[in-house]
Image (cartoon, rainbow, N blue to C red; front, side, top):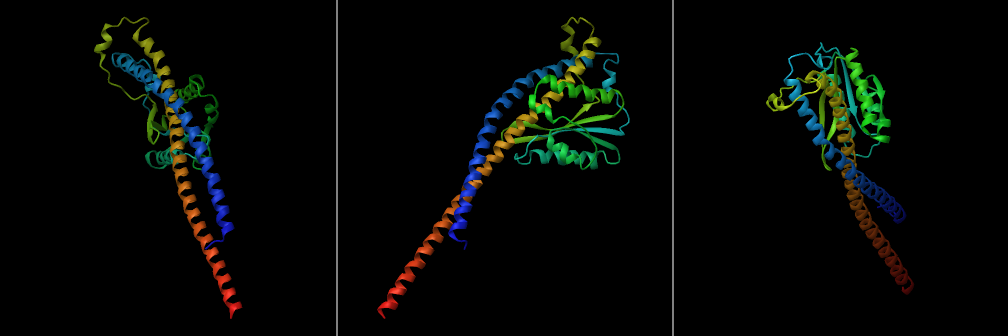
Length: 286
């Protein structure tokens, strides 16, 4: 059994760790509320924009937006891995890395697969597997639509210039604080949509449908990426809050066990001292 000093040191160490994890849990809970409100408020707009794009594009006879719908033979793939800049959030980053590697080695095995990282963790780990053409971890310093739109525009340029035949997004979709769903979404080329055009018949378009769609597709793509980053940002804080909650509970349990061990050791030491005193007294009496 460890001596009393060693157990006291372990109790102090575990208590200190518990204070840190508890503080991190409260910080993540506060940030989660703001991030959750942001993604919840954005989803209706993003969904309505997608619905409008479906109604318009499905009713077009021309090739509006064809530069973003060009289905080429897939030889070069770009995987956009959206992770976090920091760890201590459970399997949040690991799940994205695993899915990205699966795309690299299984889904698109034998093809050129590069990565674009949004988040330091993805950049550090995926860089060991393949080429990371860019790392946009600084976007979390000021997470605004304009900053994410620059990344989306860069992705659109890569596709239209023929640098990549397909672009995939891999991110965690926020469901609740305890649940994040790993999503793989095709960013480009645009997935063909089949919209019900009956609702669009009552509209008067100015300018034409084709011109509206040509303007709407880049806006929709930028919104899609922004929503993915926002989803990931909220998921990160939810995952960290859950991980720190579990870590605090585990630290509390370990501290209680150590205190019990300490008390047993102290009682054993006191008992030994009493026995020594009694034994000494008996020896003197004899």
